[in-house]
Image (cartoon, rainbow, N blue to C red; front, side, top):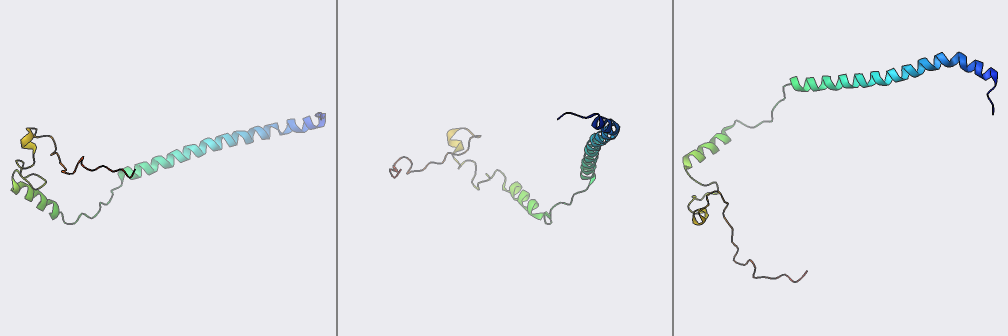
Length: 113
């Protein structure tokens, strides 16, 4: 199907309208992206400047009691034993964790699959 001269005349008169509409669509997409970025930046600034309320941690005496108990205990180990009792003194390495030994380790074989 060929283009008739009358169709060309109609199209040429509408070219400026089509060009303006396409330009508006492109600007609209750009403007929308700019507005979205501005909104995101505004939210970020509000979050940065906002004062957030902390969770209720009570009166804080629990922490003080725990700290005081550690200070009064002297060199007490966190497990409740003295450092001499935990086996680290036997091996000579103070930084290594104590080795747990199971008497039944290696004696039972599981053949159930």
